[in-house]
Amino acid sequence: MADKITSVIAREEKGNIQITFTIPFELVKKAQEEAIVEMAKDIEIPGFRRGMAPLAKAAEKIPQNRLVEHSLGHLLPQALTQSVEENKLKLAIYPKFELISAKEGEAWQIRGLTCELPEVILEDYKKIVPGEIRAASLKKELAREEKEGVVIKALIDNVKVEIPQILIEEEADSRLASLLSRLERLGLALEAYLASMNKKAEDLRAEYAVQAKQAIAIDLILSKIAVDQNMKIEPKEIDEAIKISGSSDTSSDRKRLIESILKRRKALDFLINLD
Image (tube, rainbow, N blue to C red; front, side, top):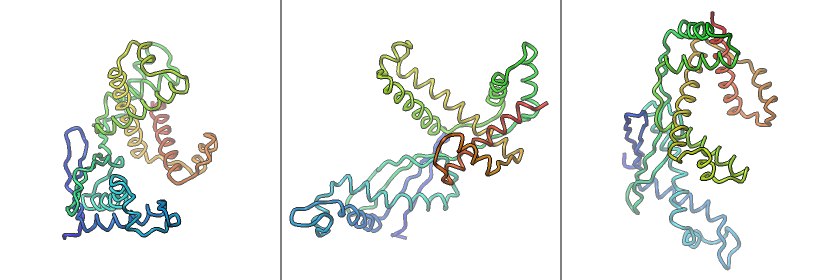
C-alpha cells in the first residue's frame, strides 16, 4: 500500500540489527501538519496573542530541522511498533535513529540501529561452579566476596553468550559519562585524570568496553539461571528494596528493574551455596 510504512531488517555480524524505514510522504505531510499545530502554541508573532497566530504564519517561524525532528517524533514510534510486530523482534534497547533522506514530496527514509537480547546457552553450571569454588578453596578459605568472584569468572569462562556490539557501546558510554560527571564534581579535567593514570583516551575506552561486555554477560547469565531455577521475588521484597534505596519512585518500571536485580542476586546466592 502506498500509504503504509515499510521496513527492511539487516542483521550484522556483531549482533546489531539495522532497520531501514520507508515512510510515504502522505504520512510525512500529516505528521508535519500535526507537528506545526503543536509547535505553533509556543510561537509568538507580532499582532497576535501567543499561540493564536494563523498556522501558515506560525509555520514560517519554525526552523526546518525542528519541524523534521518533531515530525519524526510522531512517525517513528508507529513505524517501530509496526516493524517489531511484523518481524517478531525482541528488542533489547530503543534504536538509535539516523535520517537518511527527507526530501519534499518524496518518501522519507530513516535507519534505526538496535539489537535483540542475545541467547544464553547454559552449560552444566551446577557442576562447573561448585568445582571452581572447591578448587579455589584448596588454596585458602574464601570470603563471600571472593566466592562471588570465582562464580562470576566461572560463568564468564563457561557460558556461551554473544553480546551485540551496540549493547557494549551503550554501557561503555554510560560508564564514561559517569566518570566525567564524577571528575566534574571534583573539578578535574579528563586530560589530567588520564595523565595521572598514564593512559590515553582510547585505552580508557577499550577498558570500559571490556568491563561493559563482562557486566552485560553476567547479568544475562544470572537472569537466565533465575529463569532456569524458576526463582520468584515477592512484592514485599521489592517494596523493601525500594524503601532501603531511599527512592520515592514506585512506578511499575522501577519495580520491574528492582525485581530483575533481586532475581540476579538470588541466582548468585544460589550458585555460591551449591554443594
